Image (tube, rainbow over all chains, first blue to last red; front, side, top):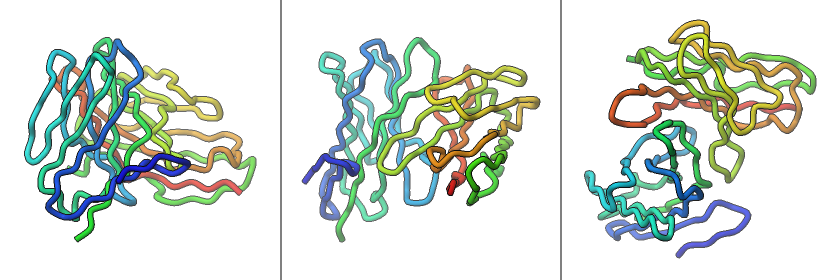
Length: 112
Length: 114
């Protein structure tokens, strides 16, 4: 399940399940969004991006959905694997600046 | 290619000491960034640079300084270390003008101020 508190929101899933990580972004003028994955002790790594003129984009095992009406972004991971365990951040930019503002992050824990 | 390289990986400072976190990238990226990451939080932008000789403040610049004399290097200076600067610092770079805003991050520098 998902929990929010003083610690990072956490999503626990079983290996093979599909995972959905949610992000509420803050700026209605944001026009470009990126999802990053951060493994323990490492820097964030790019997963997938989407522009505001799209509402869905697919990559390898990942799909990003954008709902501009409610300023909501989600990352769907198909057939989640233990190697997907990490913290996932959404980031937004606006005005073509490409200088991102990061969300707080969600910790994904995949149980074998 | 090494990508983005940060040094040191770990450092302990006493209150009031100064130090410089080094960052270099070998991808010929024009944009470079410094973020800090506190436990359980996202990344906060400290400073960024859009090219050699040009720097600008981010969300949390107080207590830090930067310079960008070359395309490759973007050092972050802490002049009078305070416990509030205990954090993990990430340097990143990106190539503006490409059809992507992907940032490439270093491995991070963990700083403790006692």
